[in-house]
Amino acid sequence: MIVRAFGGAGPGPALARRLADLAERTAPHECCGLVLRAVGGTETLHPCRNTAADPRTGFALHPGDLAAALALVDAGATLVAVYHSHPRGPARLSPADR
Image (cartoon, rainbow, N blue to C red; front, side, top):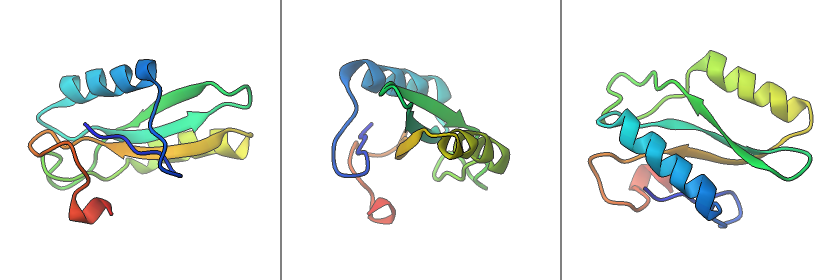
């Protein structure tokens, strides 16, 4: 899994491990969600259900899950990244990710 936050920085080791664990548990489907930073600076994962037509090869964030995470942004959290895994591909950005 590759994780690139907005601005080019990656997650810290603990968050990267949680992302990798989530991707392993979700495989063969792509996992997806948001990384948010709370007002105090703590970064947290907000996994979303993958509603893509074929979640093995693509992702679409569940609208309700996305709305719940964005409500936290409205309350003061910062959106750091949108993430998704590539369970069948290399750990690099695909052309669609760029």
